[in-house]
Picture: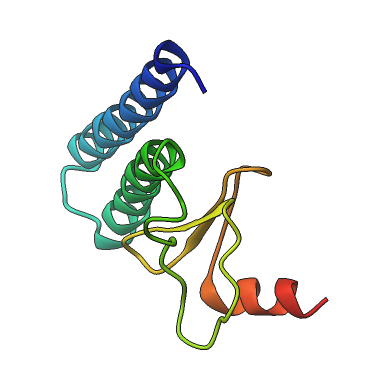
Length: 109
């Protein structure tokens, strides 16, 4: 991936994270209260977006130098899978975010 393309994708992910934070603030202002479940849901969106940025940046590094992190009990580490701070996984090929258990089930098939 070219540097320009990488920068564009990183900028898109960061903008998506900023938009999530604006939605959170706007929603909390409209409700006049802090709704923990809404805050947690949007915070998860932001963390996923940041994990996507991390994956994009890591895709530019040499995979042979340091393999990507994997969940406990998972022995393979495909290059398209990156972990998020929440312990979820992001598949760069499909754009899917899924949890540890789902990943194990997918890998068994």
